Image (cartoon, rainbow over all chains, first blue to last red; front, side, top):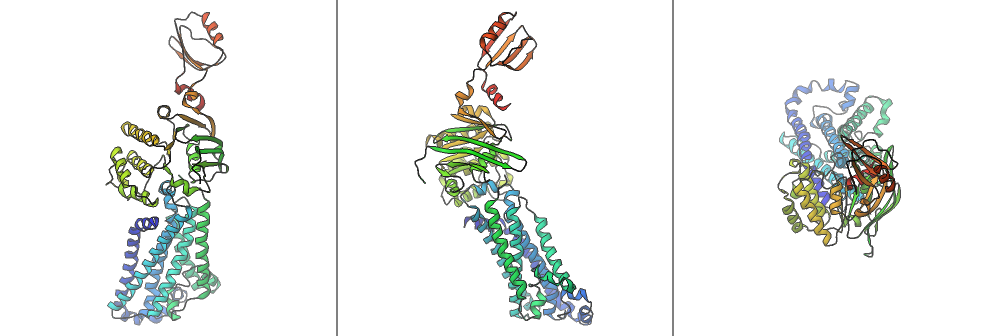
Length: 263
Length: 291
């Protein structure tokens, strides 16, 4: 419990920065919507018929002139990418930062077991992701109300839950890498999040790469899909995501309990 | 766990190899309960590797070790409750205040050590209001000492405790070690500074290139039949058993470990102006182990 509180404190600043950064961009887009929806009306057909480009951002499925369409294609993308990157950074630095900043000897020679350290850090990570998504949900609902529009609550909640699952999957894979690595690996974390995002786009553009949707969590947490399907999420991708999440966490415990800790 | 142990540390054939790096090989020695034990060796000899094995930071590839009658792997957490450790490169969370770090260490241990911590901070002149990132190495080490001592452990493990500390704090540190030791705390400290080991430790082990080369009382380690010889008037003496020969403007100096009669007879035939044959300094003895 002491370690959990300590971890929350150590990560508080980066949480606030990412939260404010991502949500400011998302909310900003909400406030742009009333300014552009009239002028976009004429362009809507054009946006929907740009082939692969439209498919990549879901503009072939939802009209960008409705708030749901705008949320699905623009805001949902920004939030997914921001949340994914934040989750990756949280995960990749969680365990390895103790060694890269040379605090591991101090932490490990108190009375904590290796598993206890993993659990404390994992609990703090999950807490921050839950807070991140819960606050985002509030900001989305509030922003929509401010501009006099509304989003389907069912779809929005389903989207946020899918986002949480997606972030948790990315974070747990990075967490396992963090258990293995002695370096902080922030670049690798961001890289993983971005590559997974690109894989999702590729899967959407071409049928030949459709299998990629089973690899990247951005597929099942895609805002357009959630809104088009009235709140239901692609089950197979989600199940794979949950399995990968469990495997990542198990691997972290396994690796960290057996590894030599660097000075 | 029994209290019926007499050895604070018991190491049997401890080996740690990693990749191409030399670790330690077949290290065995014992530290008695209640003693102040020195662990000497040049940089890179394996002192820290041995200590890090004992503390469970790294897993030995061979051998076994016990601390306070418990197994270092199986009883890791129990052992940690009763150890105070200070690493050679003490580092804490940079953004935390000194007082927060000291408190955190006590909280993780589930202990209220405020009284003892305050006493130690006073003795070592630790500024608890500063942030870790503002501290020099020496001041960080002082925080490390407080964290290692505040829970009044049964065994101290210090890895090069005095490096970076100014002489006043060094002596205050050893004064504290002596006080805790008088109350029964065993102390195991590594060092490459011979004088402090000689001054404060009763026994010592010497490690070189990953192997233990000696373990004995300081007196016995220093005692050897080698003599330090200094002659004036001749410069070309050469006998079996001479080592560390140094030529000087009017004579020579060397360490002699051969037959004393041979040396005396050889000197008798020379025109010498002065001679001294004495116990070698402890430094010389240790240098023999080091070389």
